[in-house]
Amino acid sequence: MALTPSEVALRLNSLPSDQARALTALFDKLISDVAAVTAGEVSSDTITDATETGISLLTAVDAAAARTAIGVVDATTETAGVVLQAEAQADSTAADVAGLKTDFNALLAKLQAAGLMAS
Image (cartoon, rainbow, N blue to C red; front, side, top):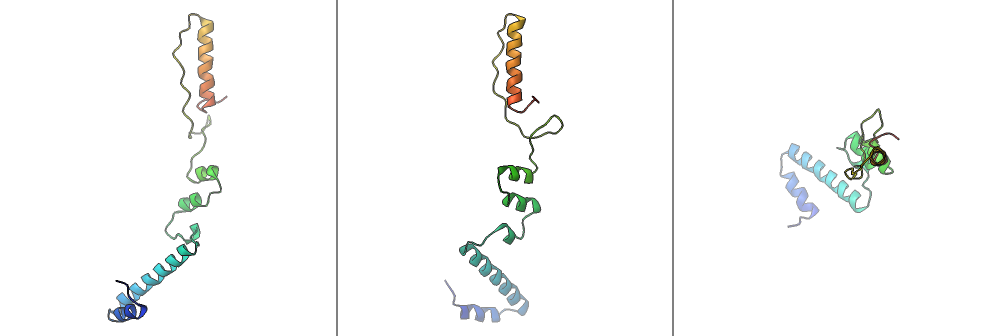
């Protein structure tokens, strides 16, 4: 059942003053939030309970900035990070050293392409 503004005021006036103030503040915040949403004015600045990391993630200009905001980095020989899974390498069927060298170099190339090994 919807209440008119005057009915809300009458009901608030019947409450103890501290409860009425608390409810009035809550209604004011709710009305403000609804007005912002309907006006399309919600932004990371209006989210008051977001962490610094959360705000950085919300305001990131691209995927690379978002990864940086949450601390995801590419792996290097010095730093652990996120890398792609390496492409599958078939079991070697080499019958000689030259064939084994070819298979091994193919494996190394796949590890390097995936970022699992420095080039």
